[in-house]
Structure formats: structure tokens, C-alpha cells
Image 1 (cartoon, one colour):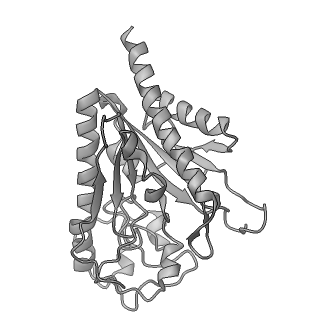
Image 2: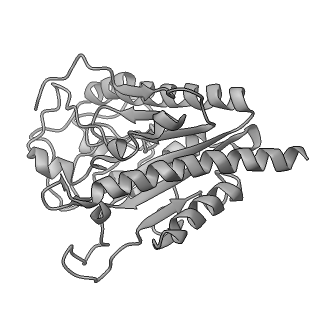
Image 3: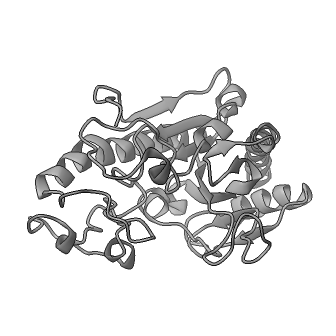
Amino acid sequence: MTNHSMRKPVRCVQPLGAAIPIVLDSPHSGRHYPADFYTRLTRLKLQHLEDGFVDELFAHAPSIGATLVAAEFPRTYIDPNRAINDIDQSALAEAWPGLARPTQKALLGVGLVFTRTPEAEFLYHEPLTAADVQKRIERYYVPYHQALGRQLLTTRDQFGSVWHINCHSMPSHAPGGTETTASNRRPDFCLGNRYGASCTPDLTRVTAEFLKSRGYRVTINDPYAGLEVLRRHASPERGVHSLQLEINRDLYMWEHSHQRHSGFDNLQKLLTALVRHLGDAWHQNSREAAE
């Protein structure tokens, strides 16, 4: 893997010009592989597990006043959208010294630190040590959540509340479907609000209505409702409203080759327009609340 050991783990792109109360984060689009990522898999196999180019889809958002927080490291190295104790001790070379509470994802090899692919291919020739995992937590996982948390609170304090979009992409088809068939195709967009717990209903409604008005198929909390980023950072009662946005990958990329296709530019324009629309809707809601 390419040596990027000195690169900062998180990129924070501040608004260019007047800020709006919108913060975006992309935890799964990092593509700079740390020097100690001694995986046995090819880069392409790893990329199939990542949310390719999602940060680039939102690259123009800071130009209209939003803030973008993006992981620089790949989620296959350590996943910011997993709980810090989502660790399968049996997959390590030794016992985990802290409290491990593995979810089903960890037991399948895709917990805090990936150990297997969904096809049951092992990522490493030898199991990771507890020290390996702890180093990743301290140098990558914790800084990501610290950076996102600071930005959310800074924006909340500036405006009184903040609308946060947690940005992801999803495989175009559920297991059993393929890129060349309509079988099991997932929606164009899935919005996750942890079943209403992570944000005001207005944020979900405004986002869904905007996308549906452009002809896209949108679902809510199906198949994804939101995981650790929303659990950790969303706090509607304190003015932090978080919504997970999952984008169907076939809208902008060829999944088999991990290459952008001709739909990328149009989708990027759509998502920039969505961010602008969310900023306008936030201000409209604030005016109505003040009346």
C-alpha cells in the first residue's frame, strides 16, 4: 500500500464566504492507505467496500457555505461508523484489554476494524494485535469524531442549531442482484434518521421532497437507519440534527471497476443544489419559529 503515514487523518473544508448551518461528513470515502495497512487484498477489492468518491460528490458544498468533514483513511482500515467497542476478540491475535461488545457486523468481519470481506476473504495474513487496533483508534478513529464533533458544535453555536448530513453510498443491488439486472435494485437514495430519533422531521421531509421532486426513488430507514456517527453526534434536543444520506452507486460509478461514469457530474450538481436547498429551508424554518 502507498505510504501516506504523515497525512492528517481528517480533512475539514470550511465555508468559502458566508456560512450556512449545514455540515456534511463523509466517513467512508478515504483513499489514502496508511503505511502499516498490511492487507493481503488488492486495492480494488478494498475499494468495493468503500464509499467511493462521496467526498468529491459534495466537493462544491463549501462554495455555497457548507462545511465538509471527510476521512482521509479508508474505512477498511478502521471504520468511524462503528462503535469503538465493536470488536470481535476472536479475530485478534490476543485478548482485547478493554470492553468488547461485538455486533453482528463485527462477527461477520466488518466491525470497527475489518477482518474479512462479505465474501469471507481475510484482509490480513496474520491476525491484528490489540496494540494495532488501539493505535488505529487513537490516531484515526478518535480524531475523526473529535473533528466532526467540534464542527457540529461550532456551527450550532453560531446559528442556534445545525443540520448535519452524514454522507454515504450503497451498493446498487441487495445481495442476489447485479448491475446488469433490475433484480433487488436498491432505491436511488435512502435517508436514515434512526427511526425519528436523530433529527427534526423537517430535515427528513425537506430532503426527501427535494429528491423525489427530481424523479428519484427515496426510502426512509430502509435498508439503512444510521449507525455510530448518528448515535454519537445527533442531539436534536441540543440543536444538532443529523440525517444519514445513502446514495445508490450506480447513479455515478461503475461498481465493478470503481470508476466514475458520465452520471457523476450531474449527480454532483444535484447534491450541491440539495445542500443549497437545505440551507434555505433551515432559514425558512427559523423565521417561522420566530414568528
